[in-house]
Amino acid sequence: MGRAYQNRKLSMAKTAGQKTKLYSKYGKEIYVIAKNGGVDPDGNLTLRRTIEKAKKDQVPSHVIEKAIEKAKGTGGEDYAEARYEGFGPGNSMVIIDCLTDNSNRTIKDVRQCFTKTNAKIGSSGTVSHMFDHQAVFAFKGEDDESVLENLMMADIDVTDVELEDGIITVYAPHTEFFKIKTAFADSMPEYDLEVEEITWVPQTYTEITNEDDIANFEKFLAMLEDCEDVQNVYHNAELPQE
Image (cartoon, rainbow, N blue to C red; front, side, top):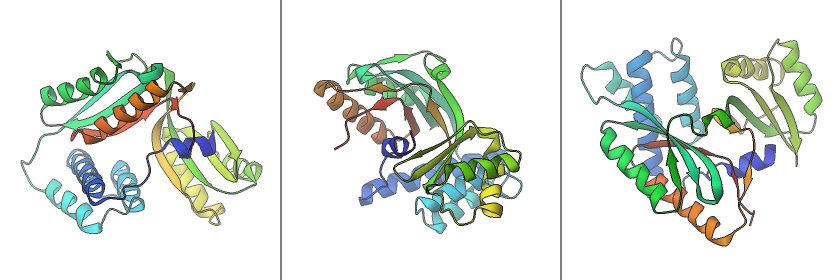
């Protein structure tokens, strides 16, 4: 699943419009995390992880610093987390995480994405039980056995280690994220982590081959990408590789 997992990740923002949305998304997320858990990354591990992820996605330092400074003040926007689930085109399973200051607007926008692509939004828990909340690390390498051995020596609970097309992917419970990062820094510094995140990993995958379903699924993702409140989209769809 390692190489396939990377292929399913959205490509890095290339246009100015995509970059603006990416910066806005991280700015909002960092603001909320810092506001709720403290502005010191050493004491707020979720904030530290998000800042590291933002830097990896080439978000400028001034965007990160501005969000943290904003979180230090009183008042400001009041964002709430919202999660929507359902069945996307081709009977795929989808989880959509949002940060919103207007829940009525958000559900209307998200519901429209489902409606206009022959998809079906569900209630809480509709598909999330078919995903695992996992820490995922991916990097170039060939010796998956030594990676697993090093992680086990560090007393880390590893779900799986896979080697595919020269990419090693490590899956572990999300609670092990920082232990794994420390293990790589201490005993495997030769590996350059290309993916390091906490995400929802599907237990099974749905292959979409029908052309109409493929077109609808791509439209579905594009519409969600345009929703200002959508932060992350997780799905189990496998599309044909070009």
